[in-house]
Length: 316
Ligand code: TXA
Ligand code: MG
Image 1 (cartoon, rainbow, N blue to C red):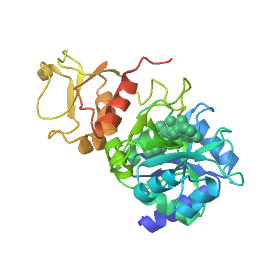
Image 2 (cartoon, rainbow, N blue to C red):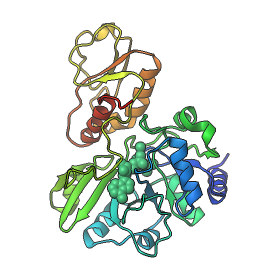
Image 3 (cartoon, helix red, strand yellow):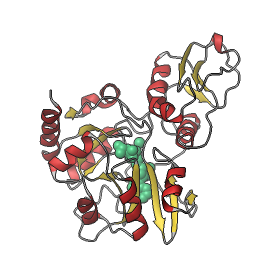
Image 4 (tube, rainbow, N blue to C red):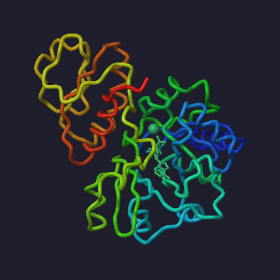
C-alpha cells in the first residue's frame, strides 16, 4: 500500500472512533481521536493503562495547538525551535478546548506535541488532534517498529500504519515552563544540552513537590520479562548482555546472547536500538539481562532513565 493509501485508511479508522497505531519519530503511538471520549477510553482499555495517567495530545500545526492550550512566551519559543520534533510541552488547557477530559484525566493542563513523519500527516488529514501514548501494554517496552506493535497489541487495533523503524527510539522529552523556570518532567529524545543551548538558561530537573508531576513516571516501566541488572562489569554465565561501545565486560564470552546498542559508542544510535535490543534479548528467555554502563550525557540521560525503570523492582 502507498503511504497515501495507508494514511487514508488510518484517518478513516480514527474518524470512526477506532484505535490506530501510528509511527512517530520517537516510538509508535496508540492513537485515538482526542475529542471522542469513547475512543479515548479504548486507549486506556487496550493498554491496561491506569486511569490517573494522562495522555499526550498530538497536533499537526501551531494553530491546532493554540486552540487547545495557552502558550507563554518561553513555551512558544521552545515550540518554534523544536516542533515538529521529540518535545512535549505541558501547558494550561484552553477553557474552550474540545479535548475530552479523559485525555487529561481532568487536570487543568495538557501535554502537547507536534510529531514528525506519518503521524503528523495523519493528524493533518484527520483535521483533529489525536491522543497517543506509546503503543505498548502499560509497563512494557515501547515499540519502535510496526511488528513490535503487532506482537503486543495487534488484536486490539483497527489498523497499524507501518512507517518503518522509529528514528529516535526513545520517547519525547517532557518540559513544563513555570514562570521563568523550565522544568524537565521526563528526559527523552531531545537532549537537555540542546534545550539549554537554545534558550540560554538551565533546565531544572525533576518535579517541584513530592507529587509525581508526570504521573506516568512510576518506577517500574519499560520492563521486559527478564530481570535487568545495570552497570554490569562482569557477566555471569547464562545472562544476556546488552553491550555499549567497543570494550566488553569481563566474562562476556559466557553470555547467552549479546546485543550491542552501539559498537562505536554513539548515543544516538544507542537510543534508536534500545527497545528493539531489549525486546530481542528478552526473546532468548534469559532470566537476567546485564547492561554495560552507558554515559549520562546527551541522549544517555534518556537511555539511563529507561534502563533504570526496566531494572526497578516490579509492582506485581
Ligand atoms: O514520544 C512520545 O512522547 C510518545 C509518542 C507516541 O508521542 N508518547 C508517549 O506517551 O510516550 P506516554 O503516554 O507513554 O507518556 C506520556 C507521559 C506520561 O508520563 C504522562 O504522565 C505524561 O506524559 N503527561 C501527560 N499529560 C500530562 C500533564 N498534563 N502533566 C504532566 N505530565 C503529563
Ligand atoms: Mg509509554
